[in-house]
Length: 285
Image (cartoon, rainbow, N blue to C red; front, side, top):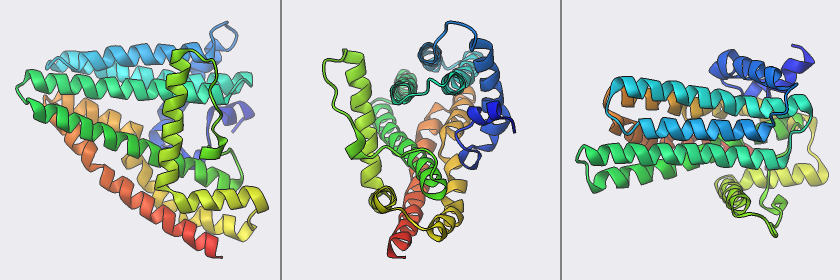
């Protein structure tokens, strides 16, 4: 793989099959087309957000053709979500600010999706059950996102000393910022603290690794023992949610998106438990 292609990837070990064969290859083509232009990675992030918000609105309508169009827009928004980070890496402008804004925009897209699916069910007469199910599924989605993001980041840092997981003590105070940046950093801080609550032993392992280092044997064993959690992540990741959203809404069974999405949190729980057992063993070695 060329160095340019390397820049397109976060790390092949944590990339999903569909990412490696579709989202990343198409995303890097978009990024390369935009590289000579004045379009910034943050602008691409905003394009992804606005297209995602339009797609979310279209899921209100119980029409398979409209929902199919919405699904196409969701995929396009995700391609732009892939392209923004790749564009930043190609230009050497990748930053913590860009990561925060990218995560915040992605979160807004999914919040809008859950709200509009709930509105659709309200129109169909579900009443309070639609709101309750949407809120519960949305909370579960947040936990699953935190799980997948942390498992991937911790794997790269502990196994290969590549990248850096954001810890609560790494968060920086926000002073004199505009409301949208305050909202984005507040979301990011909450996201980071939730990960620390879910993975306390892994957080301790990462702190130890940064302070005193860990042996190559521990890194190798960690990489081997993370195969299970890594293999399970695609079942609760963004691509799984996109596929579920399209299948449920186009078939006219929008409630299945919320119900199945909520049930997927059980897989996340298994990932967290397995991940933490591995961390405890590494700390004891």
